[in-house]
Image (cartoon, rainbow, N blue to C red; front, side, top):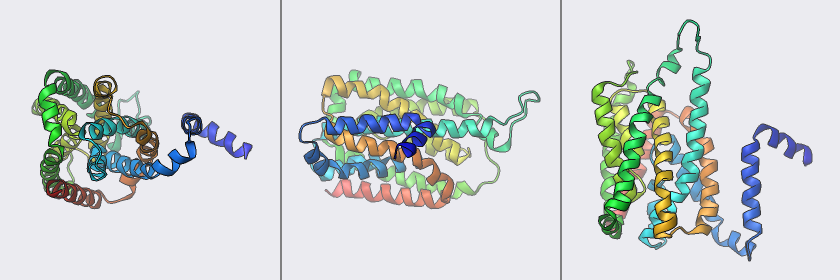
Length: 308
């Protein structure tokens, strides 16, 4: 047993350390076995949500919001807890995609300034992140602090807003599927892309503050419509979403204080697992099938939110 633990720690020291800290948190709490019995199901919800989020570029809120709504969680708690879970899952996914990108570009011949075909499809990602991250953070902070009353009003009718957004998003994803088969891919951001991504990221940040989903989905769909590599578009959206939810979590920590910590303890751990394995889902399954499945899920959740 000690040998197995040592090998695991040597291979993945940060993951093993996180797992140990998680176990300490659980078993150091009063009534730890009752807490496990009551909340262990959220571990699975976190895994599923993070796999969806990090394999499609969408936020985990597309899973968490309708599920929490079905168990009659308060709207402010739904948004706050979803943000907190995504801080775990989107960060794990962002790091996983970052290492994947490094693995594609580390073999580039620096002396001759040559880039492999796979690496060339990722060259725009850094620029895209530099454009979108500041505008997304600006949008979410304006929504949380400058438009706080309007944001609260939006969240009182959360199921309606989420339903409408989900249906529109599903339609956009369905529309992007025929474009996935294009052989000639766009590799560089044009001035029109810079402008468009700035606007999309800003309003996406506002929508994310309202619904805990938005900016990653919108940016990913735009990049796919413009003809960029699907995998790199998803990776950019995941990394962007990670920065966005971290910028917005402080509002929920210190202002709303509506996070359900026991739910976060299990769903957050599951989200980290899902964020790590999501990349394999993208690389294993057909992109078209993945998009069809995801769009159908989002459409069903949107319709369900409107009729409940």
